[in-house]
Image 1: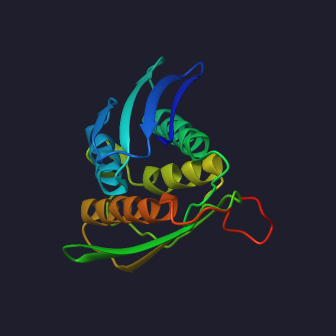
Image 2: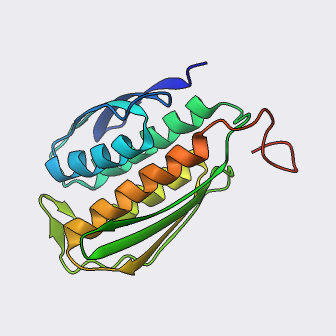
Image 3: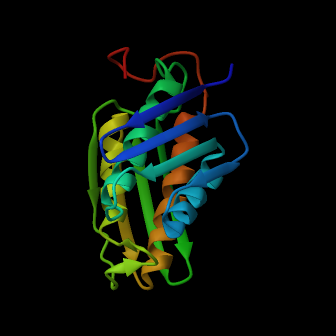
Length: 193
């Protein structure tokens, strides 16, 4: 069984088209106007083991806020659609990832109940051509659109790029664990996620 989906999200501000396959090899083709975002999202997908094709563009001249938010919403919708009824998934995922001096921990639950918490503190306002405030905003938008409970704990901070990359890789590893099929029932006493 291949768990996959296609999403097209178009607003007055952006157009996002993506294809997501959960049974992949971490391959990705990501095209947005923001190279650092492409790099971070690519790092996350590499460690999920998913395959992702994403093309996103601004329809109006604007900063990165709307496009990164809409990419997160579309990715969350695709994840949720690909998972279907979540039959047999592990449900929970967690990881701790070092990136030189930075150390990030991620714990998540495919609960269907969106919640996002973090203690990230960046020592720069920007990484490349995106604001560091977009890192938690992307993750919050992903959590909301996919129904994901997502906690990000930073044990050691440092260089802003290292911190962001550690977080994205940790999310990727945790997602890989959570979506893996390890049983034949829905992992909940309620019988639904």
